[in-house]
Length: 205
Image 1: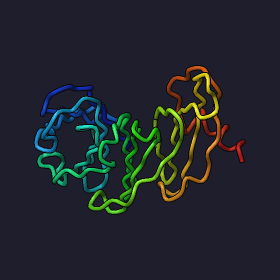
Image 2 (image 1 turned 135 degrees about the vertical axis):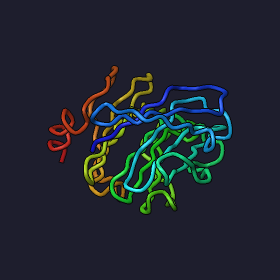
Image 3 (image 1 turned 45 degrees about the vertical axis):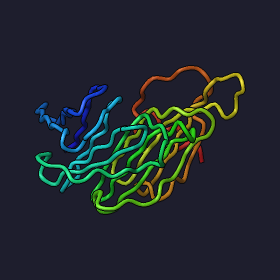
Image 4 (image 1 turned 90 degrees about the horizontal axis):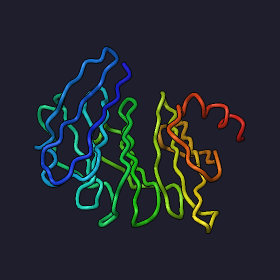
């Protein structure tokens, strides 16, 4: 079953409700107050694997992660995935089997940063980076073992225009083997990565 979850942006609250939307339009609300002890200033990311529910969010400028093994009834201890004072934004998390990938923008380092877990969030490897210059993370899509990341940065334009870049991993973040300029300058809205971007990625060998 394909599942997506959405959360509203909240400020100065210790209670966050996340709704899991399933194919049949059923909705489940989880109170994450037990997992999030402090303030949350941005929308959180959530994903579901076979045995766990995973959540990431910003707190005090750092990327936080927690998981639940009982469908959101209780949450395990929070982990900090980012460097201290990273100033994180744009949170995306995807899963496939036991692999969990968390992506965020680190404003302090001006990069898209991601972390990978191969055991459903029980442990995490070191972080990796994409992008340079002033960076905005637009989205992450995953289908099977393929992960597609879209971001923009202004590394090539001193006038401030942003180029849009795509990176693809064929092995759930083990390697980001392809990175290409999708479009130069201007503003691009949300696209279907695995649809509209498919031909672009195939042509960029």
